[in-house]
Amino acid sequence: MQLTVLGTGCPIPDPLRAQAGYLLEKSDKLLLVDCGAGIFHQLSKLGVSWAKLDTFLLTHHHLDHMSDLLPILTGRWLMGFPQATVYGPSGTQALIRNWVELYPYVRDFVSITVHDTKEGKNESIAGFDVSSMAMRHHVTSLAYKFDNELIICGDSEPLPSLKTFANGCKLLIHECSYLDGHKPNGHATPATLGQALAGANVKTIVLTHFYPEAALRTAELVQTVGRYFSGQIEIATELKKYVL
Image (cartoon, rainbow, N blue to C red; front, side, top):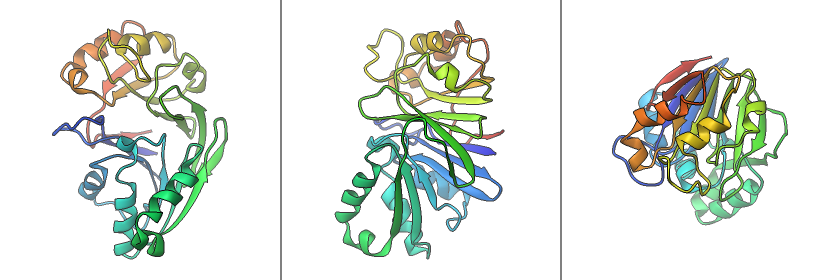
């Protein structure tokens, strides 16, 4: 499995960061997890096969995690690939159905199959064995585990139960939106994240989804999480690849 980090930003514009997005590749199959603003452009840099990139998985329904979805689906149709499959948390079917109704040219020419994924459900998605757990955010948000090696979390306050879900994984991607002292309010700070994952049996944690203050002090984020978590800690970098 190969993971490419496409975007590490938040809803506030950052000239150095796209919004959330991750590309997974395995056995000649592609899966895009989240696709906020700028992800379509990031994918074009990689020269991906648009014919193969036909499956999309959403952690939650906030725009910075899905605003590029319809542009990507529309672009694929214009390139001759009108069919796509979208997975996401409860309500994804209704959301996509209502969304495409606003754009008849998308509704009439793009064929989208949509599946609602529920917490704890195990299923095969684009050749990956995927399981999920509920996170704690303003809306329903899921963390996904891929082939028992990789976890990508939706936006969330840190949850100690994530340690059990992530047990034995090589890579865990978790947001770290704010510096310490900020009220959690559905997001993570380095101290709360480190405390929640203290003792976790995970090789590497990758921090992402930085608001402006956190983006300027990423070394501090790593240092603080490292007071509690003994494994490797990295700052998510645009277009960095991980081979698992």
